[in-house]
Length: 169
Image (cartoon, rainbow, N blue to C red; front, side, top):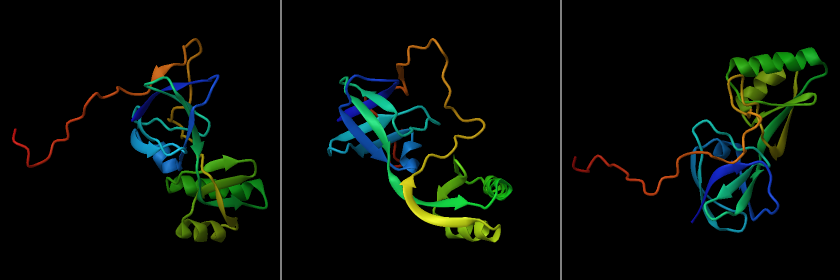
């Protein structure tokens, strides 16, 4: 199985695509399948978020592009900026992940939040779209200039032992 573990900035050739919804792009350990059907393992540092277009290098040198899957979302818009800011405040107050777009917010589909936003005067439209929420004030997303841009995302386990309660000490 191909193991993807190193994020790179650019590549001459892309050998595959890994289409994932946002909730799986947040996971630090993941078993998935490329668009071609080949199974892969992804190992990232806890807290790493894979974004649409990110490139991962595998243990055999192949390069895989991350593609944000289309998912059920709500597009939130308002007649004015103040209304959209109010909606953003109330979503943040509920620790809701939100994507900030040009004149709109996008959130995961949630009927309770939809009712709240409509109560604030927002227009809430269901749409199938890739979801790329803000990483948050303390999130990653930055890099240091001068880095070689080829970093293992996490230690790559050779073999993992799973301990079960029935195992003897």
